Length: 357
Image 1 (cartoon, rainbow, N blue to C red):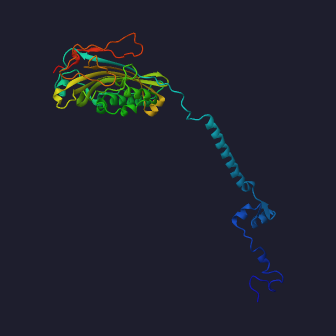
Image 2 (image 1 turned 120 degrees about the horizontal axis):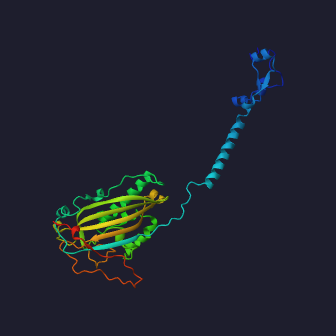
Image 3 (image 1 turned 120 degrees about the vertical axis):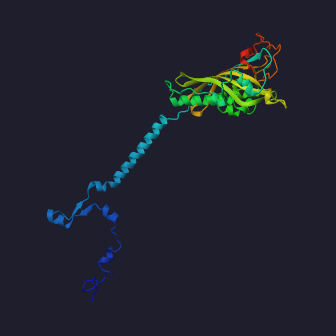
């Protein structure tokens, strides 16, 4: 008896498995059907329109792969054009050559007319012009930051912040004042001034360019020590735009230090006051603002009580309580000597600048 899928007379001779076996290995999957160029009409479409049994697929169906290839070509072309544009108009052009001006220095020792008054720091400060000065960094007050023609308010504020940091580190930090490390000051300088700074620290000379005391305030640790780490400060900061790529901050401050002898056995009761009027002119270009650096263009220091004969280029050697300048006279200057100019002069410390305990 023949099976349900076989003809009544059985499988014809000479054809193994019958007609179905001929197409048994052909698989009509979904991708094969979609790729076909012809599509069979439905039975209703054939009855209604009397159309042929098959029709061609729409062009957009066949063009799916072509459209993706076209998009890929457009993306590659855009990427290539962008690469060419960025090569021509690179946003990170190497900066043009920058000129950094060397620091100009003036140090003027102020000699007292009599003996230096002594006492405790609190007593001396309470009876001096510095009685109402603020202590430490609080005395370096900041003005209101306002934008200029070519610099934003944020850029002006950044210049003021860096300028204050330099003033605090170079004239208030106890480690710097006592002749310690100077790296905290050095890291704020524009790289173009580092060679001049290093030479000033290693081989200070009173030539108006390489005095260590032009960059920072420091005392000779073999002579003086801080009787009170709280430095009294009063002064101002001003901002000026000196060009479309340049800001300048000028600091004018008076610093008052309570000092005592560095010899053992000397106590704070033997303290004296040392006063320094310091003006600094600091310059910032746009690269300095980005890197939080500054250029120290000019400094002027008037400080005392000091002797006129002492060389102030390396460290300051103040006159302490009970000491006097005596008949001290400034070192002679030879105007015919063009090889070694002396930048420092000497002045007289007014009696009103000394405390009256």
